[in-house]
Image 1 (cartoon, helix red, strand yellow):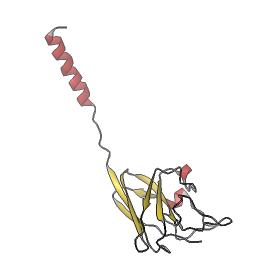
Image 2 (cartoon, rainbow, N blue to C red; image 1 turned 60 degrees about the vertical axis):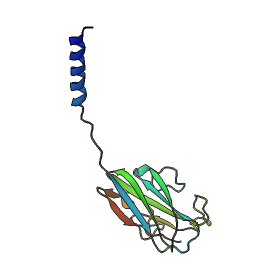
Image 3 (cartoon, rainbow, N blue to C red; image 1 turned 90 degrees about the vertical axis):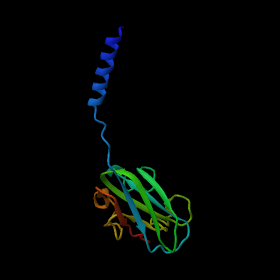
Image 4 (cartoon, rainbow, N blue to C red; image 1 turned 60 degrees about the horizontal axis):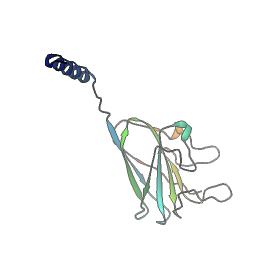
Length: 149
């Protein structure tokens, strides 16, 4: 192949590649605060979900991301970083014995649990993604209430 053809190929390849616009996806941070924990034992497990079919998730296996927060004076805070805009829900466990699972009595949890947008849970107020979810369109800070049953 002669030099003019090679140069033409490179120019055409450059034009082709430059026509593909690489789109930067804007991402945001979500900070979650938990207050009024009944003690400072263990840690707090923060699970983030973006799918209705994964929430609630008693075993914390279907989450998008999961973080563990330390407890300081009855509070815990974590920040999920680099999240694309979308609809999310949060499920939290005050994991007092640090085993990564909900400790239960006969049926009800013995450790504190929490869900975004919920102040209480019960048979008539079970957690669901549509009720727990919120839109993330910018950096956001929310507080989730821990419920001890």
